[in-house]
Length: 287
Image (cartoon, rainbow, N blue to C red; front, side, top):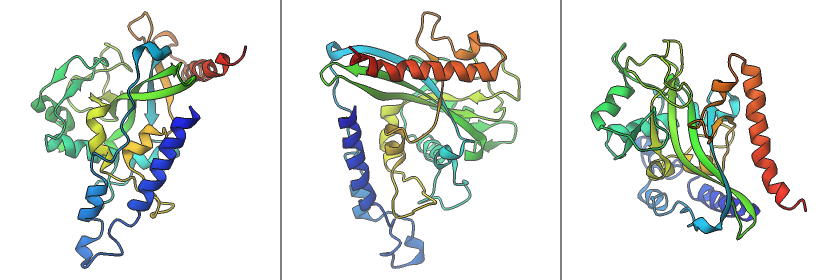
């Protein structure tokens, strides 16, 4: 596990040195500030992001599919939430702004229904536009309307290296407003939603998103000279999350289905599942 994190860390530092200034010092005109130069675009091209290594199925000795929620109200997750859409659109974008723009530009060919986290039900481009368009106010869903992301990933032990690894499979934006269409997801199951409930939108296969998220840098309000892409942020798990469900015999039943009406106990169960996964690698060497 340490080796793969070392590779990711090395790649992140190299990318930071490449993309630090965002054309601030070399701009010939103020309009060029925040616009990537041709050299920077080439260095940030989709060929540059670190490809996922091939994993032979026979080398996986243990795996667990996990659903997590990234709460954007938590301070550590603010790089995914800010800045506001009305600010600079070239350099400073939230992750939702980048995803929404890619959908509007038809750069994402496959979008999956929110009620099926197994990526088997495709929706049309028109349906996707219908979802991201708030019918009630006739406005596109903004970054401030996204309250969290649900991610689906798999923790697995590769017996060749004897280590626990993580692979992000898919991501689902969750809106905090009633968008005026019927959508559902793992978090809410098949029950009807009230207008104050969270509204999961759709699932996106993460490998389809990587070229888009790799080309968009995360705004760092602490040090603008050390920035990474959204892809690097997600792959290296630079966010806080809580487990909302794991694969099980009950159709991947979410925690809130069997720990009902008690948010505190749901959090305790989430931490228990996290501990079970984290301790599995340690138990490999216990004997």
